[in-house]
Amino acid sequence: MIRIESVTKRYPGGHDALKGLSLHVEKGEMVFVTGHSGAGKSTLLRLIALIDRPTNGQVIVDGQNTRKITRRRIPAYRRQIGMVFQDHKLLYDRPVFDNVALPLIIAGVAHREAARKVRAALDQVSLLSKEKQFPETLSSGEQQRIGIARAIVSRPKLLIADEPTGNLDPDLSLEVMRIFRRFNEVGVTLLIASHDIALIDQLGCRRIALANGSIQVEEEEDVVAEYVERLEAEKDRWPQ
Ligand code: ADP
Image (cartoon, rainbow, N blue to C red; front, side, top):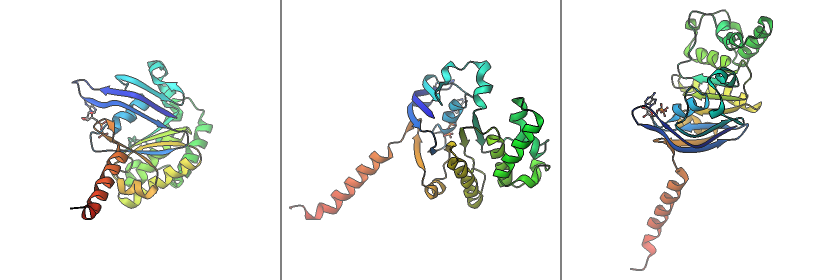
């Protein structure tokens, strides 16, 4: 579903946010990208969403090389991808229903069809009863679920989320992850940037650790640490 091939992203000023990064996410996977603040997680998601373009290398999403997608075709490309952000990015002057309907209205979906899809999406995040309310009357966890409903209303095959639980307490975070997992169970591929290691460990999904724009080779570090530990343990038995 996602093929990142030797991608470098250099921002104006010369800072390399991603350095020759390669990674693959298969269709139907639920994968977390972890790493310290500034590791390059958001940059990676921005390249996949075509909010930004790589300086070098290829980003291929569902067989489409983003390099070949012209400006004019970006909106159509983005409609295939659901995006969830830490700060929800809701429109506070419109009710929940309108917020979730927005991607469908932009895509020109007929009103009756849009209404059916909006209610199905709200049902999936258990907020059907709140469609007439304004976002600010909802809790932070509910607002995030509205953001998720909006992201999946067009039934995307791929969902990307940037620190979706960044502002939520552990219980609400787990609830959001359970919602993501339910989408994953019906075939949606998910790539989620998060630094909440404890939460990710509970879920047991694949984890890609970024550090300073590259993949952190955790296994290698673990193998070395294990080796040193074994040597230490055996030291007493060495001939003097
Ligand atoms: P993360 O999401 O892991 O915190 P980011 O992808 O946001 O990391 O940032 C990676 C690096 O790129 C950071 O050093 C950040 O300061 C830098 N960066 C991000 N966006 C820009 C930008 N628009 N212009 C210049 N530097 C940026």
